[in-house]
Image (tube, rainbow, N blue to C red; front, side):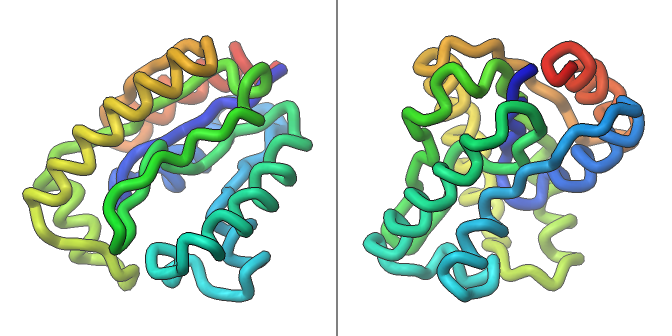
Length: 178
């Protein structure tokens, strides 16, 4: 048993994909959402996370990673990097070594991410060049994570029907979380 770390830029459809894949896998596996843990610890909404101070982010992340790494089996709904007013930051943590055995980068086209972001109430950047930049940074950061964690990395295109991508993720859940 191990943790599958699923990352991708905001609006790529990670949360929806993960929920559907867990249903299709038909096994009881927890979905671990670090941003929820971090926001709850800091007493703020998840939408406010990009704007917190570096000190609060570090304090919250220390707590979040201690909580996340108490779980040795599950699907982590996360990012490999996030955009803040200070720029992009990596979410790598040494506590994941030995716990995370599989990384999944979820991606979609810039236009699809733009449309998804536009149709949601969440406050996300709508600049297509920034979306494209984050897709590239997210991929490169995922590759660095895989190398540092000595974990297998997979990429899933979430551009089409949700079940096509969900079936691929469900198969990984069956392999790594049983």
